[in-house]
Amino acid sequence: MYRTILKPLLFLLPPEKAHGLTMALFSLFASIPGVKFIIKKVLTVEHEALKRTLWGIDFPNPVGLAAGFDKEGKYIDELSCLGFGFIEIGTITPRPQEGNPKPRLFRLHTDLALLNRMGFNNGGMEEVALRLSKHRKQGIILGGNIGKNKTTPNEQAAEDYLACFHTLFQYVDYFVVNVSSPNTAALRELQDKEPLARLLHGLMEANIAQSKPKPILLKIAPDLTEHQLDDIVDIVQQTGIHGIIATNTTVDRSKLRTNTKDLGLGGISGAPVRERSTEIIRYLFQRSGGTIPIIGVGGIDSPEAAMEKLQAGASLVQVYTGMVYEGPGLVRRINKKLIHYFK
Image 1: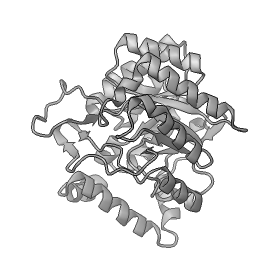
Image 2: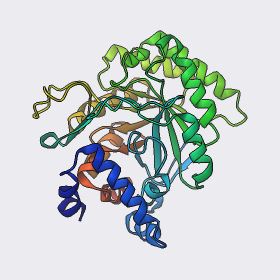
Image 3: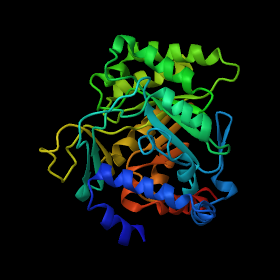
Image 4: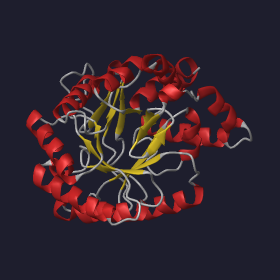
C-alpha cells in the first residue's frame, strides 16, 4: 500500500514537509487504542536466529533505524511498532539550533537517494532529555547520536560532546559520536587523528567514571581514504571505544544520474552510497581482524543490501533512505529474509 498509494501522494509534497506530516499523522493514528498493537503484530518478526548481543545489550533483531529520522526523540514509541531492533535519535547538540535554511532536503528519484543539508536542527539536549524522562518506555533499545553546535569552534568541540553525554546518559543505551556530517562547517576536520583521539579519550574518561559505562560508537564518513581508515582503527583500539557506524552521507556525486548542480551543498544518502559503505565495512573488519563491532548503514533498501553489509563484517545494520522509498514494510522483509540467511 505504501509504494502504490501513500508514496505517490507524499512525493507530491516537499520532502521535509512530507516527513513532518507523515510522522504527525502516524502519531495520531497510533494513539487510537489497539492500533500500535496491531501494527507491531503485523510488522515485527521474532525469531531466535535474529537475536544479537553486543556490549551487553540484547538486540531482538539486527535492523535499526538510523539517526536523522527522529532527530529529537519525538516518535520513539510509534517507531518501535515498525519492527526495529533498535532506534537511534539525533543528532543532538547542547543548545537548540534551527539548522540550515530551507529547502535543505531533496529527493533524487532516479538515484533512489536523498540530498540533505539539515545542519543538526534540534531543540537541544535539555529538551530531548526532558522528553525522554517523561515518555521513554522500557524495552526499546535507544541510541543517542550527539554532535557539536554550529557556533562552537572545533577547539571547544569536546565540551559540547561531553555536555550531551552527561545530560543524556541516563536515557539512552548507547552513544554515537557524530563527527562525519558534511553539513556543519569544519565538522569533518574532527575525524583527523589528533583531534579525534583527544575527543574520544575525553568521552571514554567520562564514561569509565560512571558506575555502569555505556557503549560509545564513532560514526564515520564514506569519503575517508584508506590511510584515514587505518587511523580510525588505531584510534578506536587506543581509546577503547566500543564500535564504528559506517557510514554517514557522502559528498561524492560522481555516481549520480540526477543533475544536482542547482540543489547546492549537502550529503547524499541511499543507493549511491551502498557500494562504498560496504567497502569500508569490509576494510575495517579485515584491518581490525574482526575485533571492532560495526553497524552498517548506507543504501540498504532490500534484504539483499542488508545481507551484503552483514557479510562484509557488520554486526548490525540501520536503514533510513531505503525506508523513504520502500516504506515501513522494508524492516519486516529484511528480517524475514535474514532468518533464512542466519539459519
